[in-house]
Image (cartoon, rainbow, N blue to C red; front, side, top):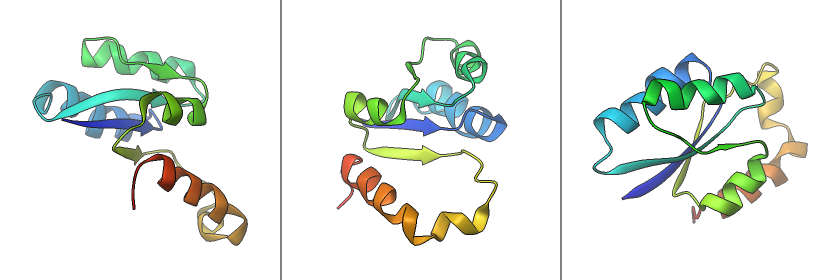
Length: 102
């Protein structure tokens, strides 16, 4: 069983990933946590999934607590070009290491 966490609990994160994972793929995938700055959206995940899903107020805490096999990134990055800027490389590498990706 693979453990997943979702970052970004908008429509795509909830309807395309969270709900199907819990309702259709629970035999092989566990939704082990969600992170979003909007607490209402995190609460909506549990409501629509029909079961409590751990919601984290801090991304790093979620990674350290859950130790997921994969992070599903559904958060909108409004400054798209900034996603590839060198000052963001260190954070991406840290996330990859915590996500057990080699």
